[in-house]
Length: 175
Length: 175
Image (cartoon, rainbow over all chains, first blue to last red; front, side, top):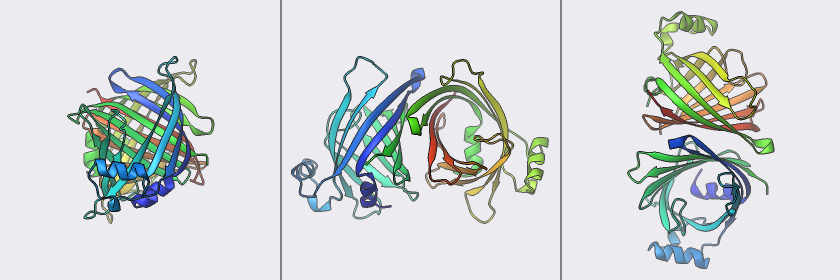
């Protein structure tokens, strides 16, 4: 599995069932959401803009995509729905197979632009690590079959050793 | 990481926070439990008995252990606590590094004896697959640090393609 195949399998509409474990106080959070992943052309203005922002040659980019999500958490019944979207641009390392940078215009743990480092493991698991000012995130995504994928996300302290939140999503492709 | 190191890291008392996703109807189940993992000597009667039951030469076994758990689920408030214990005996494949059989006297998905096949991946993730009469189980366990491990378990139909339940446990070593 290379990054193009991984992105190609991810394109579509997903129904996501996510559990977050807030480890310090053994709290469970349940989130149901809908995720839409759409391929973007390499010359899409937002792709070119993101490459420019990170000073990356756009001809190095591969399989850019747009991701949007909308969901509800049982954490706070009165909260507004969780909603957002981001553009993501994989930039493979020309020297090392199956690893590279993932540019995006908005990160998970902070609301600023962030580039992560990805590696696709021999078993096809996509592992993304992203460092922020005050936190670090690790995400693992793998397919059980073409219509079912799993995602484990860890939010760590910036030092990297302490995991604050661990979450697990089961995602079923609905179209 | 080899099987001896993996078992050695697992020995101790763990506080487990587990979420199960029942995929067909997007149901969330939350389970809090305590897990105790204790090393057993290679000549422990239960280890020898298990080797005999599976017709395995006991000198092939490595790092056997006893695991017990006790917990509570929010699935059925009136249910008795989830409680159990099992003896597990890794038997490395002499031909292939970092893979082998895991014998146990009781499986997860059924209450009969079951042997699984394990592989330790290059990143240290332990992956166990077990086939039962009417189901198959896949379990992935990895350490974020020596005192924090994660466990993803899938229960599949016996054909192996359909995942019925996916669960995720965050486990913190408390002693």
